[in-house]
Structures are given as C-alpha cells and as structure tokens.
Length: 412
Image (cartoon, rainbow, N blue to C red):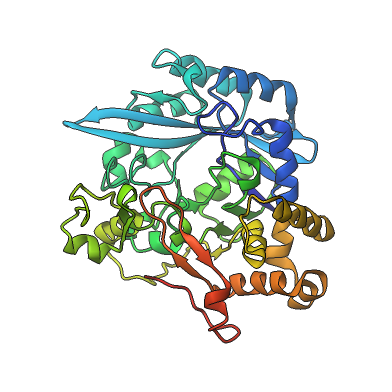
C-alpha cells in the first residue's frame, strides 16, 4: 500500500515544543496532512514513554496505532563529546521495533546521562558508542543521523561535525544505511557527494508543533510494518520507496551563511570574499548548508546518481494560503480556510500532490489553486534562510513573470 511517513518529531517534553505535541494532536494533524505513519519521538523521556504505552495499540508488527494513525517508536539523541582534541555535537534518530527494546535502551542510556532533562536528551556519548549500545541491544533498531548538514548539531555540520561518516561512526559505520537530509538541504544537494550514494536519504519534519507535521516526509509503497520499512530503507529499494517530500532547501534556516544579529545573509562565494567573517561586525559567520556541501562535494550541481530516490519540493499549504491573503500563516483566517479546503478534499497532501489542475481550479479560490500549481512547477522565489532564520518565500511575484510550466526557482 502507498503511504506517507514522517519519522522525526518531538513531544511536548522537548524544549521549545508546543504543549499540543501529544498523541491525540499528533494523530489529529497527521490525518489532516495525509500522513499515515508517524515517528513517536522522544521515547527516552519517561513521562512521554508512559503516555505512549498508555495510548498506543501494539499491532504486533513493530508498529503501533492510535485511532487511524500508525506510530513507529523513535527518539533523537544529542551527543556532545570530545574526540581527538575537538568537540563534536551530533544528533541521531533511533528507531525501535518494540517497547521492550525501548526499555532496554533507556535503562542503558540512563546510566550515561539524565534522560529526564529533555525529550531530546543531551548525552556525553560518542556517536559510535551510541550506535554500538543500540545495536548490541537490538540489531533491528535503526540509527539515522539527523539533519546531517545543520551547522551546530549534525554529522557534517560546519561548526560541529565530521568530513566523513567513517570518522564519526568508526566500526559501526556498516550498520548505518539511512541519512536524514534536513530542512536546509534536499537530495539533489546530497547527490553531489559520491560517498553518500550507498545511503538511503530520508526526509522528516522534525516538528515541534502539530501544524508542521509532514512539512518533509517519505512516500512508500510497501507493507505497513516495521520490518518491511526497515528492509526498504536498507536496500534503498526504488520500487517501494517512491520519493521524499522536501522543503525548497532555501527555505530552511541554515541554507546560506550569515550572521543573524547583523542581518547579514551571504552565498558561499561571498563568505569566501569576506574570509568567513561578518562584514558588519567582524565576528565569524555561521557557515550554512550550501557552503558545507560545496566544501565536501566531488560532483557538480545537478548530478543525479543511478539508483537515487526521487524527490518533490513543496511549500506547506498554509503558507500558500497565507500568501494569497497577504497575512501571517498563523492568522485565524488562514487556519479557517486551511481546515475548510482540507475538509473538502480529504488531506493537505491530496491537494498539494494529487488533484488535477481542473479539480484545483474548480474547488479552490483561483489564486490559491494557482499558488499550488506554481509550487508544483517550482515557480517560486526564495530569499534563502541563514543563521537560524527561515527563508522567505514569494510565489506570485516570481510566478507572474514566468510562463506556465517554466521553472523559475532562484538558485542564488
């Protein structure tokens, strides 16, 4: 069966997370979005784990269910540690096929740090050691390096990471088979590194509030059980992993380089000209994802390796509605229209991905329908995000200058 999965979210017990990130609201918004399978997030937190155990029905196949929404047991661990005289900050997503395995993982990790401090705990465990612990407990777990290009907390982060996966995970590298691209990069950027060809690239929302569920996601056509999904990811099976749903990476808040306090946003070449320092205050710039990809890439932009899983760049539907109205996406009017349109057509992804041009123009206000069509054709202009600031999207300013079907995506 074809379904959409979002493996990486956080519960209300993580920092800077909505109090509505509970099982009920996650399931409610997953249904609105059209996401069938959610990651539970935060299974290392005792209070959240208690809620998961009390709310979810065990399906007997490694997945769990609440009403119409399926869940996979997942958690993100922040590893901050020193190695060879340097400090590394790496985020890894762990998946588990059972609560029994979760309990064993938590028991072991609780001896290495305070799991109750946050839904995404910070532990002084080397990423390779974390992988060893998890796989020794249950080889059916998955460890997926999270948002691998984010500057401050990731595998390849410019401020915090490594240049090679092998240097991070050492003897455990062979057991890693999937990587999360993160909001500020898409698969096309990752394809520029030949070293990543053997890995399956996944995309997830990393949502801290219910309305952001599914802003990035994965589309499968396989059995809805843990073993099948793990096998698809391990084999990088194009027949059963159809594509990923992506932000336009420029919209991510670490796409370009910059210095937020000074309002300075720079492309990689500009950063080089300024020798990595802010032209206003002289302090070091936060080097973003595009620059870091350029540093490590051994292929030109636009290269597509054989066996690559396709992807589609989308803009969340509430952002499209907000632009047509000229208001904030958090406004009451946007929420009202969003719920009305989704109620009419079933799910957000049905609108963004499936409806024909005729259905869109017949069932939605013309400007909203046109916005969806322009996003499908990548007729968008984006001021790239930088140093923690999301990029700013304009659909209509760019789209009105483009003939139908013409791609007008600003690549900066």
